[in-house]
Length: 450
Image (tube, rainbow, N blue to C red; front, side, top):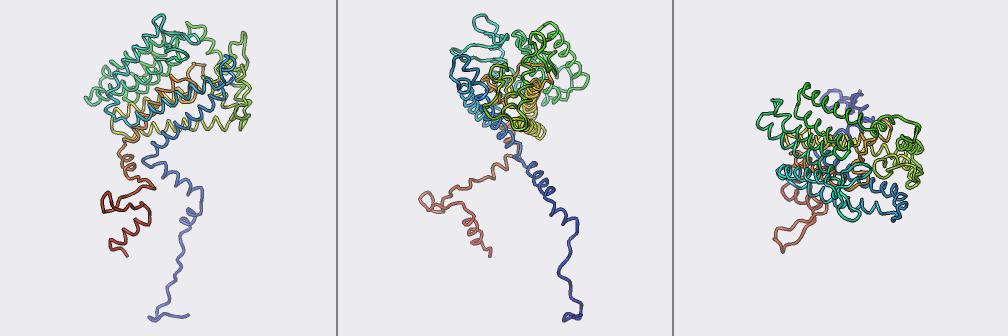
């Protein structure tokens, strides 16, 4: 055996690595999971999920509105793209509102809470004035703006309750008043019940359910005790039972849960044909624009039941994609509400997340036959400018809150344009230098690095 100059045996150079580390490096699934976990925990994850998810839902909704509304427009002797053009106009205005809301400081959002609430209450009361308010599908919750344009003030009531309720609870938390049940309920619950009363005067119970969900979301975020929470829930449930029992139309909708046959008098026609549309879609659907149910068989194909048309044309893959986008949006909203130390941001982000998630669950549950048909649109997806505008403003709120997080703010400040230009030391008239890796490397070497 050869020896070294010192007389000691040579040291082996190749050292075997532990089997565990070699297994981790060779496992692609675990490596992919680790990368996904790191990306998921980045400061800007919520920001990108909210921005990207909402834009994808809106764009896909525009495509499906165009596909689902063509037959309805032709039946009304209108151009095939009539509803699509109106929805596109609302989406453009909504994008501007989203951009404005995402750039507004939190203080300005809080300052707008009371004006938005006062405006929403005024418009919701104006709906009941004869000659001004108008009824659509049996619900008098609309105001005609001239021509074919209408507005539904109750949709703006959701945004008003979120902003005003978040500001109210934040101010009371700063004064340490939320430990008393009177301050937790008053005036939040009376104002919410006033909005619910104005909505129910028009007969729109679907929107009232969403408003109730927002109220409970705010109370839960405020830390309402179980007894108080159950008490308010019991009162709301009792009122809901009375409203359902006294309305034959609502009782008929309740009886259509899980129906597979239209029944006597075709009472469950819409619910059953929604199931037919989903069942005929298969895995990948019949193709964009190839829906059969939208040819007069499925009522409200481009509004309340657009998810059924999506299932028929895009199949299970399309519906699961929509569900995944809403799930990502909901997770991002919860993450923003959970990581902030600002009470207003926490309440407002939680309220918006409750609003969008509850409305999506109620709409999709009705299409799947799991819940009664409430007549609420799918957020950011269904046709309707009155629903789209306040929802996109609310998405802008979430984006502003996600950007306002200290870690996200630091990450955004470190970002530099890939092809940005830097001016030389000679001032404005000096030579311009491209911000490339070669320039940065030469600058590092000039500082003494070899």
